[in-house]
Image 1 (tube, rainbow, N blue to C red):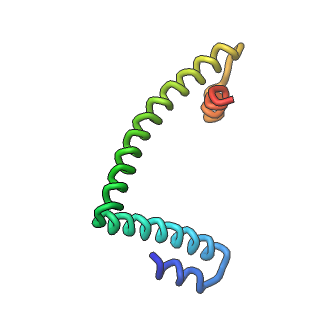
Image 2 (image 1 turned 90 degrees about the vertical axis):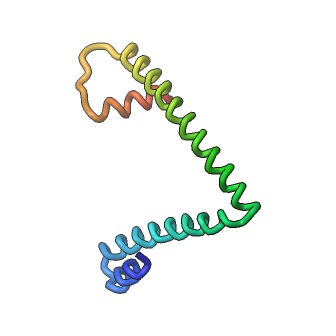
Length: 102
């Protein structure tokens, strides 16, 4: 991916520069993931990475429960505060989450 991004950067047009930046960003993310996998071999850093992984799994469970409760509160308060007919669309989801957070 690095070679693809460098070749796109050499062509130097606006579309290829944006694509090169995207490919380079993805390449950096993959490189750091590979670096973390390599650090799992170390005795101290490997155990810390395992604890971070377990913490992230617990956080994902917490955030999914939090999302359900926030969505329920936002939908209930939105429908109770609105009067009349409201057209169904994508904007309604934004209004529901806006009501839950603000």
